[in-house]
Image (cartoon, rainbow, N blue to C red; front, side):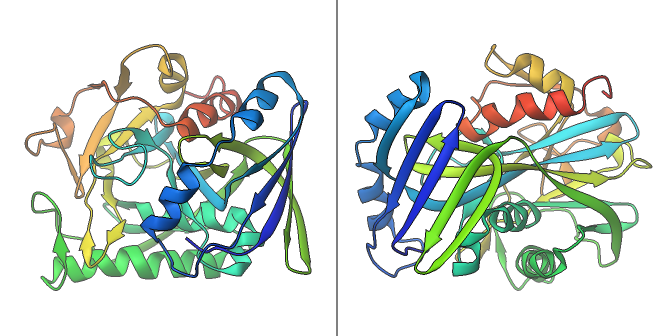
Length: 317
């Protein structure tokens, strides 16, 4: 967690929030920093977001994430990550691929956090190899993310890095490239001040009052229109220490996800772990994979992102 003294001004619907980020320490990923931030009382901000008005609070900045939307043969499908039982926040929930700023540039450009985390955490492969998404203007961000996730899986494949859970599928050595686009999911406005620098951007801003963070949420659209849902191989690229976390990834039809979100169990088209279709206990051949009922709740970032994604792709599922 990168910590710098900064001020974030947020305009969301009829609310105006000034979020102050206080300097705490210089450690990246410090549990003490996270714990102290979580104990902050931002109930006034929560109330203002519901009724409108103005408020001041203390939040972590910057956090961001994406929901990858894969344009497959059968239409748009969204990918969500199952957070593990030991996750530092929101354990055992289905979440967007998300994380926090690691550089001062990312503090001023939170969409870079979203893109980096999306490419790191959801590694896509097909029969043509692992997929390098080409997002205009963001090649350096994607190269950085790929260097973390793809390199990690290649090292695990060679036996040079540990992997949590069951033995994954062999990681493909070939690379394929495909067009992709990072899409904002809302018109909330945020102005960030870090030192003498100031930056204004817009998007969907999600306040998480369990972690006292503000997430900038996006969709990462990836063109895979020649690929079926059974032709996918998904890997979790998140690294903890020196281990690949190898978490479960779920693929949903966008329309079905929107209809079920917040209304009971979800139905996923496929469930993957370590590059193979997975039923929760053992590997299954993709063609035999059937829709999966998912009892886990959605994280706040996922809940608020689903509706604008569904609206964007209405009628395409």
